[in-house]
Amino acid sequence: MLKNGLLNSYLSLRNSIPCEVLIVGGGITALLLAYQLSKEGYETAMIDRLDVCLGNTSATTAMLQYEIDEPLCSVIEKVGEAADVDSCKEGVLAIETVENIYFPMQDT
Image (cartoon, rainbow, N blue to C red):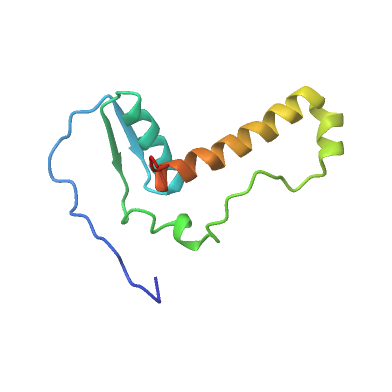
């Protein structure tokens, strides 16, 4: 924000908006949720008291990772190997999904 300022600003909501799903918050998690729900055909609206991605999202390092802060052998002891492997695979899939949203594969 200090370097680039506000890239976009949006008007305050003044009217009712018909929707099936209302997401309160405009951070990266809300944006990804809104993207997925819209893609699945739900009429989706998102509101935030600040500008989009101006809260906690703007203060993060913007780092996506599929690892956790605990060694995998410790996680396996707690949840079992199958659940741990599934969790790791889902983390990789989540990162690939975000990558494909922002950098869709081009037909060559």
